[in-house]
Length: 84
Image: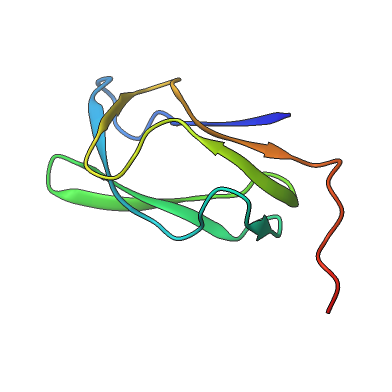
């Protein structure tokens, strides 16, 4: 499993709020697909998939908060892509 963690986005560690998940648990994701939109203070930013695979589990749901370094989700890179 590959963990998707909340990166440091400002000089001071802050909590961020999940605005929107673009993918759901069980979805296939390609590396660099946008997974989630986060908000810190009045700015928003997107977090991309670090690898291709199946989005296995989302730990921080919409409107919940996370701190820098928290695991937001896990991706299973050993999963096979869906058939066309």
